[in-house]
Amino acid sequence: MQTQTRKAYRHFTEEEIQRANCVSLIDLARQYGFELENGGRKALHAKKSGGLYIFKDSNRFYHWTADEKGGPIDFVMKYGNITYPEAVAQLLGERYEPYIQTVGPYEKEEKGPLIIPDKAENFKRTYWYLISIRGIEPEIVSVLMNEKKVYQEAQYGNCVFVGYDESGIPKYCSMRGTYTDKAFKMDAVNSDKSYPFVIGGKSDMVFVCESPIDAMSHATFAKLYGHDWRQDNRISLGCTWDGALERYLQWHPEIKKIVFALDNDYLAKDKDGCYRNWGQMAAMKWCDKYSEKGYEVAIHRPHLKDFNQDLIENRKGRTVAELDAMREDELKAEFEKDAVDEPNEELDMEEVEP
Image (cartoon, rainbow, N blue to C red; front, side):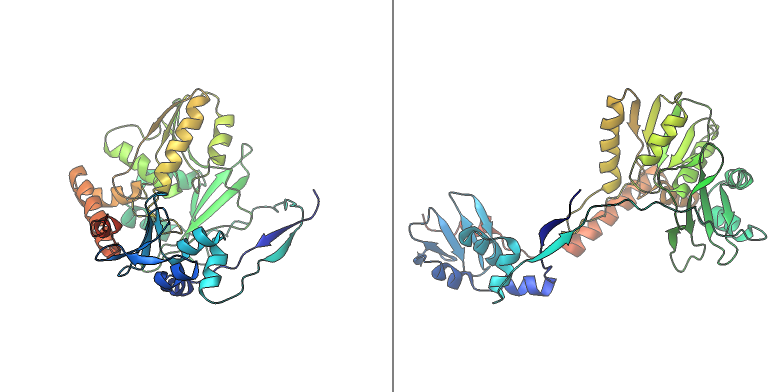
């Protein structure tokens, strides 16, 4: 692969974007050659525009014919036929020139051996944390410790979760802090997420979770409901990528059924502030992929964010109905917190003269 060059663009701050969107649309429309006339109590109409209206109070526009609307940045992009960063720069009074970035050929860096933390002399703190704080059944914690899949780090007392290859060599290692007043989690140096943390089973079914604690919590629910928690297989991906699942299925061709027990990220947002339930989006994506491969697939969605949160509340005596009510209350509080008094073009258009 040859070295390539590409344009790289400056990222504007929220404050700069806000300033750009505060530029008067009325002045902009006139600069672009539009002749404005009265278009109603709240709007100005641009003559010979195909239905362009500028709303004085909200500093936004709506174009009837194109069914397009927005603020000053959108206006300059549309009528100046320029890109988003160019429009923002223009409104800020800057000259925008993208710089050229040289991109060399990608070379995959080979990972060194996994560096796992030293074990503590005893695992009392980890045992206490997983059982008393996380609500996981003591039997499950003890079995996984005996299988050397869970232990306590010597230096900081963190929980350590280990995934192995078929030869029993550690390949994946994640750590989770045991202090309740501050959150800590990270993967060990050279940890490989394509190797799963495994709670082995005997059936042809595997439950797929995001984290080791979620897999342990899911197994705990099985025990609490009177099932043999060692009957079915459970793995964690360490994320929402399915590399660890693909590897586990290669190891176990007897698996015929996959249940995705990923997080219920009902309060998560993307970089643009839009709600994105990443866990459930991934679950639906993997359902499509693996059903096409011939597996029976299903989704087991937690009531709250993940199965450990469900388990913690279950230990407090909460019912399923109460968990659902908690989720709805959280959603309501989040929506009310994020509510803003945005301009309503539909109401404004009622004021526009025909």
